Length: 367
Image (cartoon, rainbow, N blue to C red; front, side, top):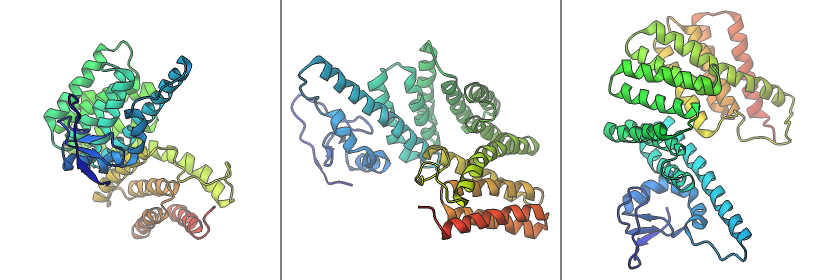
């Protein structure tokens, strides 16, 4: 983190902390446009998001230059708005990724940034603010701050009610977070109601077989699993979650594995990863699939084939992410189960094929 120093506040000007909006005493030495109430919040913001966007904030928080014409001024305003829209999505994705990784405290500053930029661009009552409110609600739940989470969710609900237009995707997010709230409060009947609505609106927005719809089914399965309704949970984990992720990743895997074996890169370069997902979605996939794997492994004697199925999905995910050591680890675990349970040769051949492909990629990477 860059050097920090005490802040001399100009007379008549009130500077607020970036994290809590209390009177500021410090300023970031790198950008000189971001203020904090003290070292604790400065360190928290830096570790969460500020390090990633520090220099991007300078043109947004300094006075606009003098323009020679109205046309130039309008162009300058459009550029500023585009920068803010970029930061809205970037901060949102970073906060989402933290949440899927279980880093709830780190998610808060990033989500607050997304919320403030949304307010600047869309206004204080726009439905565009709702996704950021929901991030903050989920982070609060993760931190055990149920009252704070309810406040954010109430604000989100009120904003949606006042809106004349709200997308199905936003309704889905709202109901999912309400479902999570009631799960935390152990009101499972209300939680199921909201998760059913989440699934409905997600299906309208993305389709019934989309990975974004499967998230609601995953949470619903978690409720049934917690209530010891294992048959219902098993069906949801398999049909509405694992199989949806398998289809999505397998489609990418088949195209990419063939291209790599033939040393073909259709765009003339190699991507950092080839999942078709952003960082938050990759983190969601890892969290979802490893959670299901842990459940499958706890009942391995009854469901070895289902355990192997999830392991193979994780192999494809990490292969597409180009994390070959992780892909190999899960493939070997799957092969070990096949041998231990003396399953059919078909499973053994399929997993060995995966292992050979991973080994070839490690030994002869495409450049």
